[in-house]
Image 1 (tube, one colour):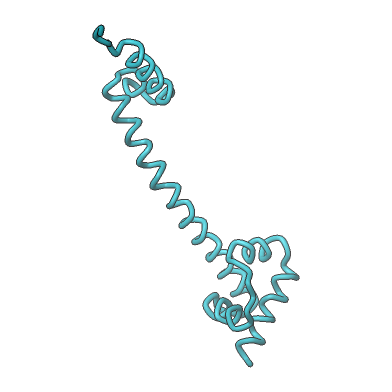
Image 2 (spheres, one colour):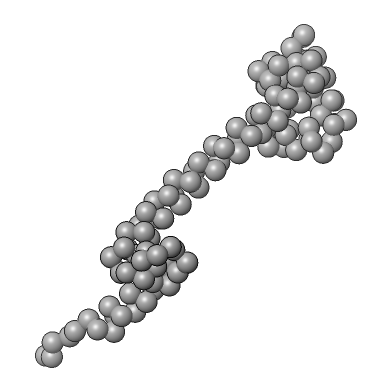
Length: 119
């Protein structure tokens, strides 16, 4: 059985890697060793930041809701507590969008939370 060399497969793998790192600065896009390191770090950062983006967006929604609630004379924590008591199933993303695009509807939600707190 003849010995199999890895020429074509290795060449294809190198080309795939170098096409992935196209656009990186300096030798990180040309030098194979540096390209491997740069690609590995980029994948690590991408994985971490996909999770981080979710966390950051939730923080943004909470900041928006807090500002909207304060304009209506209520604290954010009281608002969320009132919604839980009233069994309103809207999440923070939808509440934030309501506060921006539908202020009248958000006023009704705030009144619902206040009534639930009083009862």
